[in-house]
Length: 300
Image 1 (cartoon, rainbow, N blue to C red):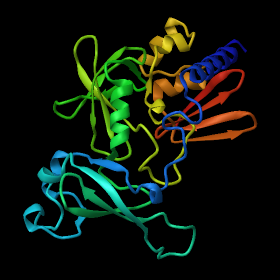
Image 2: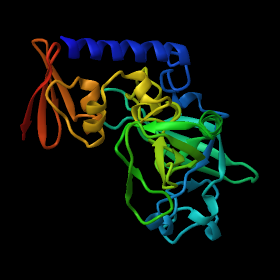
Image 3: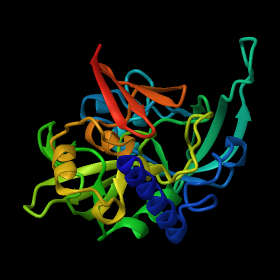
């Protein structure tokens, strides 16, 4: 019963903290995804391509083709388009070719700001790849630059090094040194962070639900799945042994769901039945009881 009360208390602390910081419906990232039809006048920034894809260029189409700006495959050259600001001038819903629910596919026309060139791209499922809303990038810089955050993952990608990760603790303060465009429209903004011992990595986030696949929505702000904005030790009154286990990536009997989530990450699925929860991970299954907490860990 004590474990259950600790979990309930932690939940209430988080809820009250959210109410105090504006993380309720209507706060940034809380509103339902913006419909593509409403994008006219909105400005996007073109994200960089991954290093191995730069030669392919961007799979956008120029309304008036200019061969000097295109790759041999007809895409737009990465060295020319990367970082450009695109203003939406027109949106047209594409016809659905299959029976079933409405298909949220669109043709979006952009003006490349500072030029007279137009290009078009498909918004499949309501999302155009390789773009970040300019307002999101500016707002994220204002919100996070210079602040301290705490990763909800025990490893984050290394920044400006060979591919790899750096190990961090869940309750380790990370200073946001820069906020830049990432490479993926799902999490198009990178918070470049440094540890106390000067290791540098990044946390990829979304700042709003603009340019996301339709059908995705959560009342939580998009970045709350990957980071805390305040020290989690102040949010959760867990003992040192529990924090040590979490930071070693260990789950133990009696742990509450929030503790297992921090130690092992989000499960693939959660099944609720007869008052119990079963979490499915790629290599294991864990079961929770509302009073006893975690009571079973089974390999798959």
